[in-house]
Amino acid sequence: MLKSILTVGGWTMASRVLGFLRDMLIAASLGAGPVADAFFIALKLPNLFRRLFGEGAFNAAFVPAFAATLTTEGAAQARFLAERMSTLMTLWLSLLTVLGIIFMPQVLTVLAPGFTDDPLRFGLAVEMTRITFPYLLLICLTALISGVLNGLDRFGAAAGAPVLFNLLSMAALFVLSPIVPTPGHALAWGVTVSGAAQLILVWIAAARAGMPLRIVSLPRITPEVRLVLRRMVPGLVGAGVTQLNLAVDVIIASLLPAGAVSYLYYADRIGQLPLGVIGAAVGTAMLPLLVKQLRSGRPLSAHRTMNRALELSLALSLPAAAAQAVLAWPIISALFLRGAFGELEAAATSVALVAYALGLPAFVLVKAFVPGFFARGDTATPVKVSLVIVVLNLAMNLILTQYLAHVGIALATGIAAWVNVIALAVLLRRRGHWRPDRRLRRRLPRLLIATLAMALVLLGMRMALPDPVGSTMRLAFLAAYVVVGLVVYFGLAHAIGGLSLGEIRRRR
Image 1 (cartoon, one colour):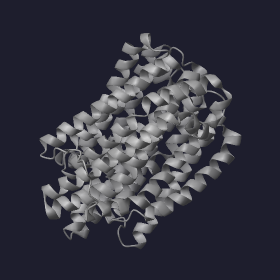
Image 2 (cartoon, one colour):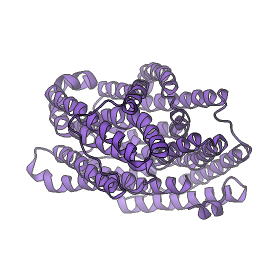
Image 3 (tube, one colour):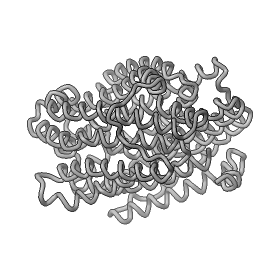
């Protein structure tokens, strides 16, 4: 599992670093004005549906079914299942894409009601979202084939595909900006082209792995397909609830003064680095492994897998959260403070990053706990928890934004994530599917001590050093903070027994 996590996490890190470079270019080109707000809505809408249909409900139902079929019935039957599901997904999502493009003004009236009072922002958002919406179909099919690759324990291509998204987005910004109305339009075209490129990449990888999928003309609803669809129903509701949380954030942010959507986007992008590198990698690697361990009658192995995943999640997310909270201004100013993105925008984004950082460990832990349900074919329980979470998130959004504006949205999201983690952990423990073992209980306090020590050292540096002037110096200071934080945290954690660097090296 650790090797798979490192593979997924390594490629995700590369993608996130390129994503930061892309966001730096976007911030310098668009700032946090109407064009930026419109593009971020255009990017968020297909991604919302992608997480709903492509990664949320579908992966929760498909990956365990594919891995189980592969283990018990062989590659031919597993490929048969994947082809039937890809055909159904293509037909359904093609229809959804066409309808979305046609009725985009009505869709945005619901999802971004604050834009309707600003004809410029609303018109730009409609145009750009129509350009990006085919990305929904392309990236959902990419997610399906990525699920096949994960079931085959081939994680590289699926994890590396998002690199193309960032590379092609940056290329589009440079190449297309002179010939389209705004840089936002150029970025929108780059999004759609990147979806096609990612789909081609994972299809080739699957073909090389002996699983070349094709679209069948008449998809049959076999018992295996019916099982996936049946399990998708609660997963679809649960993913829908999660995405509803995100949609609520967008709706409320659109009602705030111009720039709020952009502040939250840039802050969330920073938070997405550890979430993607740690949380997504852990969840992706855990699910097929847990399915195989449980199907082969090894519950104790599954129990150890869960605890080691939680241990690794905490070992990396705790210091990441503390560093983001302490270094919010140095991070935002170094990455984005240039061009159209001024000090006012940087300050507003920094405060949002502090709020997001408070919930970061919870976001990662959710990714580690949910496979414990999905691997047992239980897609319903996370749904029930999510129904409570969406109500809680909405209530806190409405309350906190009155006092904290856009920062209230970020804070509400983090609080809701912690409630989600606690509920999932309690349910798994009550059912006897997980309990913290002695090693996890022993190491967690040590990880907290190392995290606190690192935060105090970084805070001392922030107070002692002057604010750097110029982009180069800001990046240099940020690099120094990162190096010191890494040395302090990992050195102390290793010294007091919070983690073993030698163990990680041996298991790579």
